[in-house]
Image: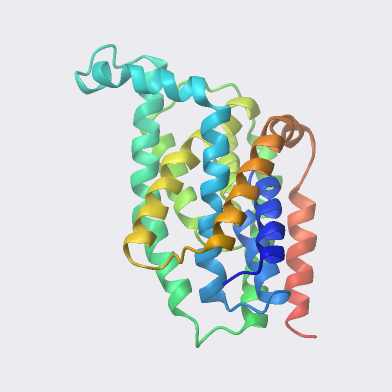
Length: 266
């Protein structure tokens, strides 16, 4: 359970960090483990719960894209104008969401079940390793920026698998998916938009699945955390959408990751 103060802090961090390639799940987990005295099995479900707020912020920010997809669904089901941009985006979302669930759910359950095997210091170090990995991947992806415009099934599979591994705390969902899209030749603007779009169904499915398994506990302060996550997520998504294209966050991930690993030996 969270206190009101903890809920506010976590909501703010999630709202801001979700759009940046620095692993919001890793950041909130690190805060809960090192400052709020939570175990990894307690921190991880709460970190995932906080994503509902930023998911709703993404829905509001990308409402025009989502309305277009929803209106086109009858034509999509009938396979009319199958080569249209909206149809290829719909296929992309279906494939990436399915692969995210197949890969991500076992990883989440493994991390939650590792309560006795992973101490707080070890969890921090592991998260740090994956933060370093995220930073290195981002630096490599910068070399792959191109002008590929059409989404293919192979793109969907690669990015869906990448998003599945983002279930591991420390691997930034936005960082790894944007990096994968850049490596596939998409422009930065399109990569960011697709990354934000694909987060919506993935988070929704994850929340439903964990809720059905009784892994998410609802109380007043968890709702407060979600509310702050939504408000700060919506206030920052537009600005950070532009900032993320210009600022190199890879070194932030690498330095924070190194500090997290070094903390294990202190």
